[in-house]
Length: 116
Length: 113
Image (cartoon, rainbow over all chains, first blue to last red; front, side, top):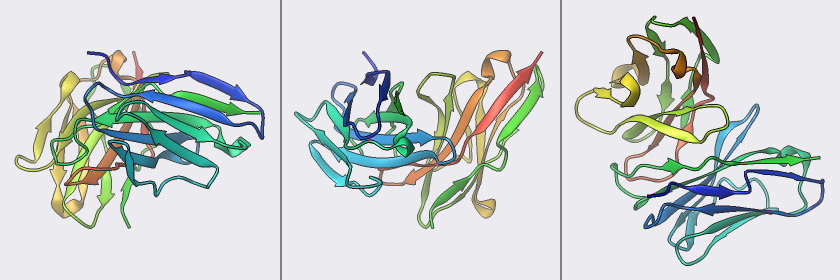
C-alpha cells in the first residue's frame, strides 16, 4: 500500500504568518510522530500521537506549535506566527501500534518550510 | 541523559571499499537501535534494527550492524560500497516498549569512483 504522505512538499511563508502542514499516515497505523530536521539541530522529536491523543508532546519548542489528529488518521501540525528559526524540514512518521519492540516507524518525504 | 553520537560528520570512501559508520549511545534502559538512510530530497528509510538476540544484525542493501553493549556502540558496516550508497545515515535509539526516537546528527557518505 501507499506510504506516509505529506503536503505540501515545500512551503515558503513570510515571518509572522501561520502555516499548516499535513501528514497522511499508512492506513491502519495507530501511532503518528512529527520530527523536525534542521541545520545544526539534526533530527528532533516534536510530538507523538496514539490514536487521536498525544501522550507525548514534549518536543514542541514553543506554544506557537500545535498539532492535532482526527479520525485516528490525518494529522496537522500548525505553526503560528512563524519565525525564521522555524525554517526546517518537518518529517512525519507512522507505526502500526506505537508500542513494543517490533514496532517500526516509517517516514514520509517531509515538508520543507522556509520562513522569509 | 539520552543521546546518540555519530562522531563522523562526513566520510568519503572509494567505490568497492569497505565502510564502517560509528554510533555511540547513552540510554538509561534497554535500547532499541536503528539505522536509517536518507537520500537527497527523500524521507528516512530503515536499514536495520536491533532489539535483542544476536548482536550482529543484517539489513537491506547489504548493510549489517553490530551491537556492543560494553562499548555502547552500534556501528554500521558494508563490505563493498556502491556509488548508490551515497547518502546521509542516521543512527537512532528508542525505548524498548516503543515511542519516540532519538537521532544522532547523521553521517554524510560520499562515494568516489
